[in-house]
Length: 236
Image 1 (cartoon, rainbow, N blue to C red):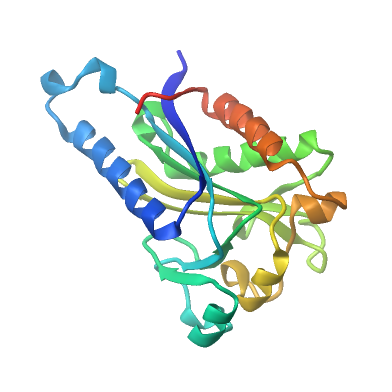
Image 2: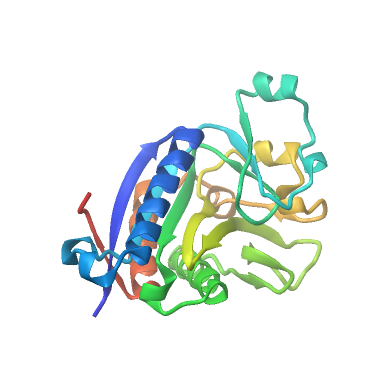
């Protein structure tokens, strides 16, 4: 039987407010996991939550990331109207902005029978399947998480989806950033994910024109549902 996951599209959403909302949902799942079995309510037995959104321009640095991978100072951040946060996920620095599908799965991995490695693999698989429907071939890279193009060519390899997660007691938060119509110049102000020798791309760049981000999102939801064997519901 498919696991039930609450889906919410937050549209354009402030990064800090969305981070705080994730933490509320994360804590809700943890409390449910730690509750006595007799006190659990059947109606609350969701396997998790999935949030989609677009953020205004913002850079986030993971807990193990290096500050010097942000190549600009505070004054320039203001000039380009971008925020900056050091956060509690894994990974290094990345960019979020308009034209990007940012996905935050707050999942109880025990409900799915998954470990963290397979969880990340599944996210990558859903992105790969989505890109395939648009004629874009993509794959994983052995040395890095996320979804990449031309991984066999070190000169041409480029990332189209970044992944950075936090997990505690098998509950996840943070997630992925999928470049659809993203303004790629914002990546020139960082070493994306800590790499100074790898490129970044988007569906718009690869296909030579702007894409219908809502259509891409619907296809991605279908692929995530299939890969994770879950049913997306609206129950909050």
